[in-house]
Image (tube, rainbow over all chains, first blue to last red):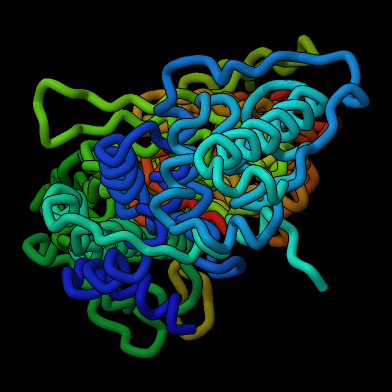
Length: 181
Length: 446
């Protein structure tokens, strides 16, 4: 009900209500954009573009679902469509050859947010997209395949590769911890 | 339970909220939703609908009044006491007294004269053009026709035909929405991403490419439409019996089609780009029957003390103007396909109409060139039109403009062909119709 009243106030042209909506969702959405973007500037650009779309089409939101989910979906689609290059997703025949590398949670607990962010942002775009969508955002492989226009097996393989890549990078980042792996 | 390493990443990554620069809000601000002045548009649309409905109502009212004044099928014969009718039109300048059984006056006329007087009932549609030539020489009176001094009949006859519907409203209504290619007011992600955005940097134009929509592909939605509009329904007359050719000519020269009206309420379902509509529609086909009878005569019986003392025969020219109506209730069923056109939408539709009930009012000429009333359920013995017309086929093209959130304005020209003639088989003259109409209305999406 609060979301509905806030949206109604926004649609009636109340700027203060729109600012409230922006302040409520802009920060977490910027974090989401940063996970999909190459750099901070691109993430801010995506955030701005997505919020313009959100305000221009706010009247189409139906109160049957949460507003946050609706905004989140627009944000993800905006980020994905802004990616000009291909996702560098390669099809593989089978997944048996891939063994997921495990990382000791104790090592991860010693990593800060900025380190993890750097690790993810420096991943190849295909790995980063697949990893963020599956691990961070929680998309299923089926949803990923429909969104990225690739097969499901490709999505699975990319996620596997992304995890292994990340694990390997963590090893390289913290050689002192290598012996713990 | 030991956490997975991914959970740690999520914990450290997802819940971190970076600081948003202020300039982003400043760039988003110009694109905020603006308050829309809907009341003005609604006021004009409601006013237009009110005027249309009022004009249709006036049309019916006038026709009802006029039909009351239609002539009887038989020639007028004044009954006892009618000479004292206050609506009598005897020219007072003639100084010709009227004799009544209750108030006999001295008859100043020579009994050898053939005094001919003419009395009209004010409620008739007759209008006498020939002036009265009264001869003061009472020995030589042949024709006396009094000029109608009353202005009421002239007003009725000369009153313009009430066009039942005003012209369609101003079609140049600006869309209240931005360029939004929505088909059902539910903007999918595909639509969002196909929007062309204007960045604050004039050098950069952000165009989002098409993106997959997770919404249900087979979208169904429902809508309601209400409309009114003018209609023109010409018809053809064809004699099925060669003996009726003379009557056919009488009718062809005396009848003409006029601007009619159409109104209706429809419910529809949209499945992707296909639409199915049905509802109820009212059509009022308006015609005029207008003819002159130069050989008109009327016989008046004059009584005195309940004794018929003489018969007065009057001759003149009778001008008759009668308004005919064919009112139809239809059940239209149509199928359409939506085509995008700018911010609007064009929907060609084809369908059939099932006539639920028809009733008719008015008169037409018969084989002896006299007009006879064919009004339904009046038991005139001349009810020549059917109450169940049957099927009709139609083709419409609807142009839809978005107006407000779920409300759209549409204009819909169309043509309709009535498969069966309106007359009964026994009448021997087939009267077949087709019509052109323009519907203007509002569509509401549920």
